[in-house]
Length: 197
Length: 197
DNA sequence: TTCGCCACTTGACGCCGTGTCAATTGACAT
DNA sequence: ATGTCAATTGACACGGCGTCAAGTGGCGAA
Image 1 (cartoon, each protein chain N blue to C red):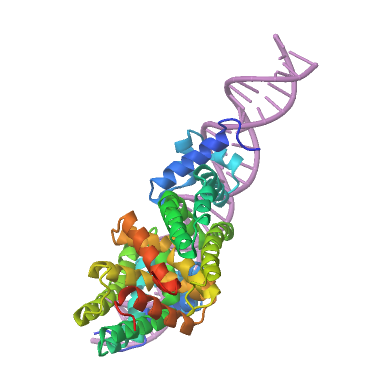
Image 2: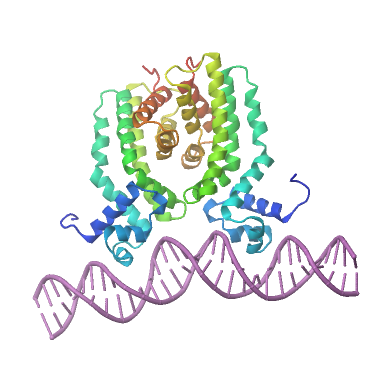
């Protein structure tokens, strides 16, 4: 349905991806993407009506290429709820840096663009479902901390794992990726698991 | 040095404040502020060279009016480190909603404007110092969790208390302010205090 | 009173980035 | 040869920010 030839459309998506990934996010204009794709600025508009839709399409393209679904699926096979929680944090946490450029651009557009906001919210709901699954696994085991409702636990975990938090710890505070993962796992365990082993 | 007459400058600052506070942040243009202040758009430029500087001046004005320093000082008088941590989280957490409009605007500008980025970073460093003081108090008591260096503990607390996290929990997840404060206190306690009472 | 200063006004303009439009080119298919 | 379709070139409108220049009106000093 969608993968036969190295089309212009694809070249645009890859150009956008390349620029966003290794990039000052905000500084990626339509003209830049066009140049990177070796195409005129107007040609981009032949394929994507607005900048927002191009960004959204790029996220989808990325998700496909990077195969998020499959990665997060790994956490589903964990035996206990606590293990599942850790596996999920590791899977998602290691995915963040790969989508960070995109995320930053989308997050910036979110303020002004309805569509970008919807797209971002959609992606984040997917993460939230992962959080929900992890919390449910804990609840099933009876190891979910009793201090919080399941709903609150999900909200909390989801917030803890936000891209912004990753950005602040890894970029602003200079944490390593490993440090980030381990700490998040531990904070989550201590905050959500009733007898944090 | 700065408070004698209800000057135009002040009216501008108050107009900006009013709009940002009860507002769609991003939708606050120079022209809007001017109109709100009952002044021509150009007159604003007679007092503030750029939008960024106006926003920065507005934060300063707000800080003065709301008296952050004094509020955070309260947490300094707590007896134990753990109490100090809780008091600090409460003080800062309750301050966030009052500056949220400003914060949002500044945060949005941060992407593109050097000066806004610096101003925001400056404000956030102040919060970080509060975090540092709380962590140091724990360390002095010997109740700082041994799993983390003091530096890491500060980074973690600072991140936990970010405006973005407040926004996500209170606005996106619909938490009440009380729910937010209590949960943050508990997560911080469990993550940073060695024998979380 | 008159002059000059100063804050402010009005209105126009340039810059930049997004998005639109129209006219043209060139390849490929039939 | 002709039609189609992707892409090109170049121009333009719009919205925001910031600048510039030429007023206007009020108030204090001479």
